[in-house]
Image (cartoon, rainbow over all chains, first blue to last red; front, side, top):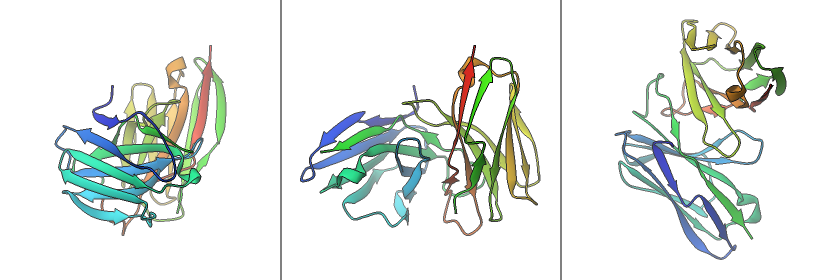
Length: 115
Length: 112
């Protein structure tokens, strides 16, 4: 079991649906991340939140909307997604946003399929 | 820019050794190593910081040559549990925050 919890584990949605992915950690970490991972590819960074503020947006389309309501919770709101958005979405956290000895702890991910 | 990992895949017999390499064209602060099993989360293995230090955990160790911007992961006397995909993640100057860029991955299979 990982210390970063993601829900749901699987999600199937149509292109017109609105859904949200949820990520929670209770390790007191102040940096949280969203990654997208396609099959047999490395994780690709989407967003970084530092102290509950968005610090990095890697040119992600606006149909993905992140939200960090508090230091333990991270959401990813989805709307009007495309079939190519089907992927594993990973959430991660680290103790502090900066510093070069901070491992990232990953959740098990949400496997998203767009019909 | 994505670091380059080699080899892309390797098959071992239990007890054999392997080396996985990670190279970057950019100056680096650190290199992180993760292992991901199929359908699971990437799991942190270790971080190598500037200074060329070598770190180890049980029979897995790694080194970082900051002059060459290269890191190597050494798996000694491999076990079945070592199977998975290994990713290096690099941190470079001017990155905002703790931003990792992952290499393409090395798929390792250990057979009995």
